[in-house]
Image (cartoon, rainbow, N blue to C red; front, side, top):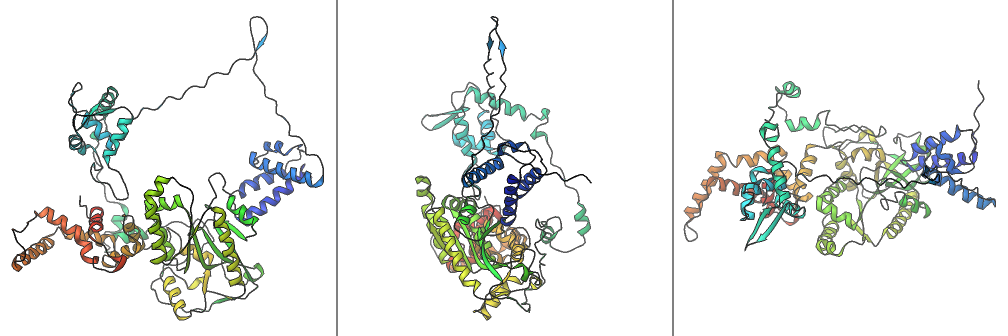
Length: 612
């Protein structure tokens, strides 16, 4: 048997071993890298005079070498010994000889400038259609064309509208004109109204676009749509009467595989009936309370470990891992000697009834813009956690942006506090936020560690009975808090796992600007599925819908109210009017924030009913 290789740098190896243990305890993503560096150092018999020389080892880069250097400097200061000097690398210079025999160092060759890529508009975009419209004029024409004429000529060549914005967007296809003017493809004159002309570069681009659309070149105009044939899934299910939307959502190909094998497989469940169970009781002294923060929660892009390091310096017990919901939450960590006799999951963590979402002011504005704000509130309320906290950091942002979104921020915070029952804490910066989290952790340690915990066994939980069960327990036993394991909470709170058709429909509705969670729930009560909602709009175009409209018109005439001739709409306009008013007629008279009225009802009809 060959003798074991002795490490040539035991001190450096000792520090790497400590960092591996620290990365395991805190769940750092750098754990595989540190392990690889430790193994390489352990197998290396060569002695290094300075830690910077260790970069030759597999898995040990400049970052770890710098950490080792800092540790060695600290060690030398404590021991009172001199710090080894960093060896200087020798760079070889190329030398040339001139005609006189003297050496001359050649000047470095100049770096080639990168050639800018020519601008080409995307097929059927706003800029593409505008260039084709302007290209219909004679090349030497000095008349130009107006905005209205360009829109009329360009609309057949564009997939987006030149006059109306899409839901959740704030621009039309006409905004591409600004890009073309800035790139000197188009110029404008006021004569007296604005008229638009192509520059010489614009004419070259327009000719290129026209040539690319020539059918003889096999471009987009020559392509034919592919006729979809019957799929295997359709042929297998053609005799079934089940809803195709349910088949699509519940099919195995649509289910997300669990990335963490420790997450329990919680069934969907058949009913919402309340199960009977015997709680698992944890006595004081068998667990400790600690904070868990999401591994995507960073102080800044350049300082990704800033928050964990500051919490460690403040003495806050914490760990870092990917959270399915929220940015901070609190758990009870069960002692290993106690947990091995109980079925508490792989992590031995118990979810407590507190969760926190952290937003910087610029993040809050961004989430309000793209709709994430409503979806996150919906998921937080759906988690059945009663103590939901929203931490807003007032990071300095541009004054113009603050003037534009100041009222929206104030309204959003007020809605969270009054309508949603979410406690909002506003801080000036990250340091104040961490001080608040430190106080919260101390408060929860005192509150929980002196009392027993009552745990609901994971085996009795299902997706359908979890929320009714928690509501029932809080109503019947208000003085006792029941908790679930962290692994069960992770499974129940997953974004993609356990989504029902109702959840997906609610999320689809909330993508329309102005539809909050409460409004979406009221719509879903009346039209249970996306198919039912779409069919309701389609039925307004049927004979039954038209008959109802005619009946209403005849009733209005028979009453004889009003003066002047009755305004009769053509059938197409009457159908659009019915679609715009369909939702408002159903829930426009509700009280509070649940009602949907004229403008929002028309926006829903534009998205779901195809009303333009």
